[in-house]
Length: 227
Image 1 (cartoon, rainbow, N blue to C red):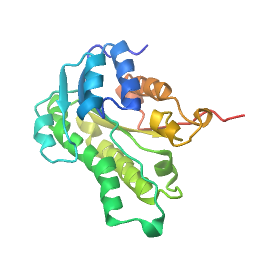
Image 2 (tube, rainbow, N blue to C red; image 1 turned 135 degrees about the vertical axis):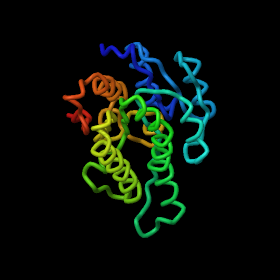
Image 3 (tube, helix red, strand yellow; image 1 turned 180 degrees about the vertical axis):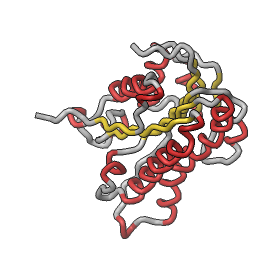
């Protein structure tokens, strides 16, 4: 089990399936948590996990940045995101805005909020959840989703290159398949071909304990192959 007893971790998307699994790993590892989310999902997370702060924030709103600047954290784990399937020729500007707002703008605002504090303390990790389509730069009926997740990856990796000498590092996690969530099951996906969020959460906890000279910037996690 990883030991994160000296760390304060901000977890966005609190209450979601992946965020819940990550929060359990963080609690088991002794980390202090700042939970960021919305509405009932956030409340369920706050009821289940101890947190130093619970923030109900819309991260698509620029006003969230000022709130986050008041919170001192060592790590940001950004799980906010959304998927919307659409034919390329039928995609609308509204589809474009939704994908980039939820998958990229939320990350941008979260980073703008926590980064000043990380730079002051000369230490910090920013970890984002991308997607297998972004790692492969392709995906049928997912052009906007793929593009927005690829933007997330490029942003974090560029941030890492720019700020690693100042103590702030970035990492991108690529689930190379659908995550096993109630929503995905409701949409007809089979659990045998999906990735267990608990496995992803253990990967995240492992990444957070790497020494500076062994930092991992990208990792792909694949589902088991169905026989």
